[in-house]
Length: 602
Figure: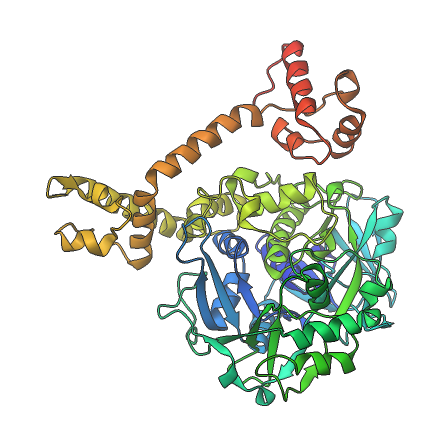
């Protein structure tokens, strides 16, 4: 082997998507410590949810892998926020944990263009020709054109069980001991973040009759459009904390490494530990917990919402204060993990280091949390790394295009002082970038990048032609003096209601396309208003800033001048989203551009 076009370091969700995407262009080396851990779900065995399912639908539309793996191993599917508008509806798919990893390994480890390399990365070294050498701990020097670091929570990682700690990146797995050093040597500022997982409980020790059962949706959904064969096979459940739970936590806070000051890393605000919840929300006498199976014939259930870093003996007591868990046996104890992350404002919009050209980072190393955020970054980084290796240009995904664009834009221009989680509230034009139209938005983009086949593009284009035909058919038919689309815009009417009036859709419009027709007709006024706002924003958004001398803009605040000079935004819109750049600073930039008298529109 003379080398690889791309070497991906790490086989988690970011590494999987990076290797999968890069292998569509070039030869890929996947460097992992243990191939048996590729695709592992270390936290909750589920994909999707509010703000996250939109990412998975977009990854799927771009030719990615996660949606396919999730559907193949689904045991429970449910649309969340189903009673609300389409902008916030989200699919959540419960997976069989072991089967997900096995399916991922079948796909990745058997790929003809992906070479799995077992080892630990120790260093990165330029090869003097625009490429890189990945140095392993056993002295191998692996040549490549581009590198994607997808090290997850492993860089200089420490796990905590109460006040005791050990060097681990995940329960029972060694950390990545050396990768932080070459990043720091290049000038990257590394931060310490913290995350954690709940205890896993033996399923046969739980009294499920005492829990609130949540059945799967009667009509299962899937990210690929084809629900998995077992998508309705298991329910999930709910329980809750009790006053006894809360008292036990208050009495033992000194045993928590987070409250005792042992942990320095910043944890996720939107997924706090159970001890953090009890302290921060002391006015609540209970907190809901979700009980999720690890599989159909599972030996474990996962207590979502019960993340903890308290010592095992206290976890035993705490779990048994929960309804249905009075005789629970903890099979794997909860823990917290501290790890290094890069400052994501030091990256480009393609996830490439500004300090190490040809080195890309993706996933939790960039300060995010969640499988879905990791997968989205992995796809972007893997695509850009492979195209760079082949000397092909890659245009970044814009913020207005979808959730992936917002995720990456936020990371690069705002950064984060805590693990970043995607939410629908972060997306300004969320009515235009729904999960139901992800393929319409993203498949042409994926085709242009070389990620999506001609046949898939034709299929998606034909789908939206049928949807447009369905809308036109409604507008052309009348009942009681009103057109079909006018009837459908009434809040109390749905397609079945207008069909009862004798108004019909073309026979070739399938169930998912019927739903799309209804959304587009019912929300047409709101969608049009959102498009007008987007067009208005675009007039200022597209003013270019490349090459601008910020020292010459005298009215800028010192903070804005420093942040703009370091981040180097390409447009006014990007500058406006940088933390520390005020509205007055944007006004100063616009006045300066006008005085220049030079057109900077794209």
